Image (cartoon, rainbow, N blue to C red; front, side):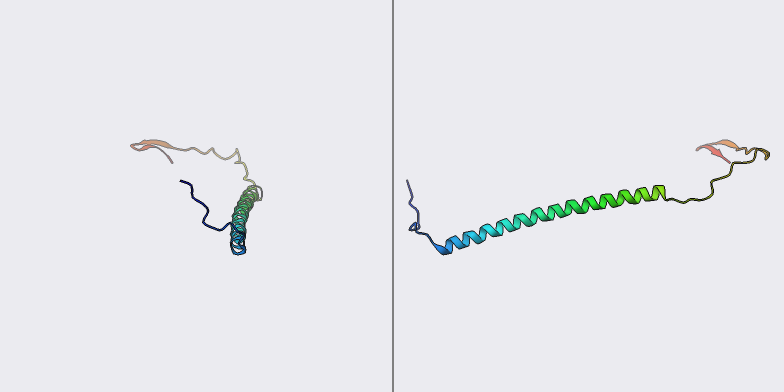
Length: 92
């Protein structure tokens, strides 16, 4: 069975205006979603760069103190005493 169109087939300004507004609204929502996704990607990249720069800063601008001095060989050598315990070895 074939059904005919329910409208008279004439151009209706109200329907055209409603369709145009619907299309514009869909386009705006799509553009906003793409914009927010791009902003999220940029913010994630900025956070990564900041973390990397903080890690490099902490690595190369660390505490710069006097380097430890080597022990004098004139002193008697350091001797550690190790003994076996039930839980393993203990060094004193």
